[in-house]
Amino acid sequence: MTDLTTLGIAAIRDGVRDGQFKAREVAEAFNAKVAGADALNAFLVKTPEHALAAADAADAARAAGETLKPLAGVPIGMKDLFATKGVATTAASKILEGFVPPYESTVSQNLWNAGAGMLGKLNLDQFAMGSSNETSAFGNVISPWRRPNDTAALAPGGSSGGSSTAVSAGLAPGATGTDTGGSIRQPAAFTGISGIKPTYGRCSRWGTIAFASSLDQAGPMARDVRDCAIMLEAMAGFDAKDATSLKLDVPNWEAALSTDLKGKKVGVPKEYRVDGMPGEIEALWQQGIDWLRDAGAEIVEVSLPHTKYALPAYYIIAPAEASSNLARYDGVRYGLRDLPEGAGLQDMYAATRAAGFGDEVKRRILIGTYVLSAGFYDAYYTQAQKVRTLIARDFERAFGECDVLLTPTAPSAAFALGEKQADPLAMYLNDVFTVPASLAGLPAMSVPGGLDKDGLPLGLQIIGKPLDEQGVLNAGLAIEQRAGFTARPQTWW
Image 1 (cartoon, rainbow, N blue to C red):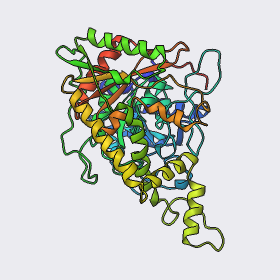
Image 2 (cartoon, helix red, strand yellow; image 1 turned 90 degrees about the horizontal axis):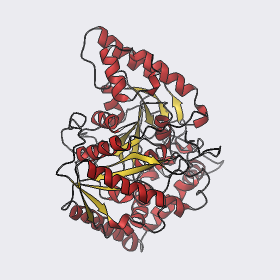
Image 3 (cartoon, rainbow, N blue to C red; image 1 turned 180 degrees about the horizontal axis):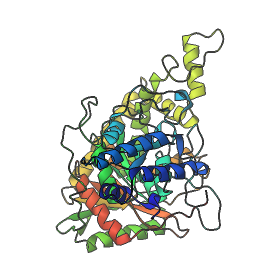
Image 4 (cartoon, one colour; image 1 turned 90 degrees about the vertical axis):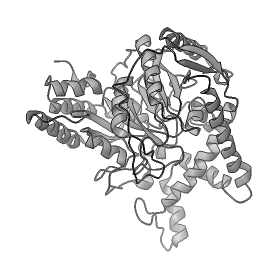
């Protein structure tokens, strides 16, 4: 029999439905693979019993002749930013160590309702703040990829680094991610998988630990575009518990997948040709343009003049929202409490936060509190919000000339862990291509396009109009078919 862990979501779903194998066999195979991959540090909590219970339910439903649920028999990884009832949820931070939610996030509940099972909770950058998965309080996630003849540990991207590593290493056929400024797309590019951030509001944020509420959006990470479409259908939907949730029916994205782009226009933003961009990234971008032209699309150059202000605006808005959201972690009701002898309430707050938050989280809270403070609010936060409006307007105008945009996903391939840790600004530049779409709340996807000179994956990003996930998925599928990307990391762990 085929190694079941080499199969993606569609193949597992169809195989269970057609009786080619039992869902329990799939769950057991992935559970065994997860158990043997501790060297990657992708999982913070393993839940083999959850995966087996969902599999047994799928097998029982099939034996009884019932119609199977959309994800029956499919085990997945859950980023540890989603609250899971009865299972520890920490956001990879010491301040939430030991926290076991008495409730389930809407996105995870939607997936369980669709028949999926949980293999475990995936590691991430602490509170989703980071681009390399080096800020987790529970150790770095290691990419399954390596440079030739080099054992240096590489970054799996961030913040959804546990998710990208789990999917790329074959520990899970799919995983949830969250994307605030690129945290689905950049790790997908680094590890040679696909990932889509849907339109802001497509997926409920209820029960997802908040970083920056006006930017955070859940999405799927999987081996290919079809699997992302299948998973996103299960994750998305209106939720009355989230005031930003869109009251719209969820389209059948998988059924409408098409690689025929005749009549479509693909915009190439000239401002994304940044100084110092590696030749390999430039060449891959041109290759992506040629692939989409081959699929029938017309290529047009567009302008997004405020792109250069996106990163500075993001690093004011996101920390400002983080400083507000993270104020709830005070040691009073749940999570860590550090109470020095004889300390008062303010001392407890200070001690708990000093012990519980990591350096990057503290850095962003300090920046956010500063830009929201009296005398600086108008100079920084108000200005950043105005820039955000201008960036959204740029996209609106560009989409008057085209249907989707094509850009690189990240300015480089994966770098070694520790390579950029000492320079926060160098780390923040990882998000230079992904942040603008986040600020505008647009759907955007990364698909693998090829390998760099060291044999490491490089991704291409498609950005779509609001609510046009279908257009993004179709362009992604057109690239996927023409790229023929089948590279997988060699097992060393």
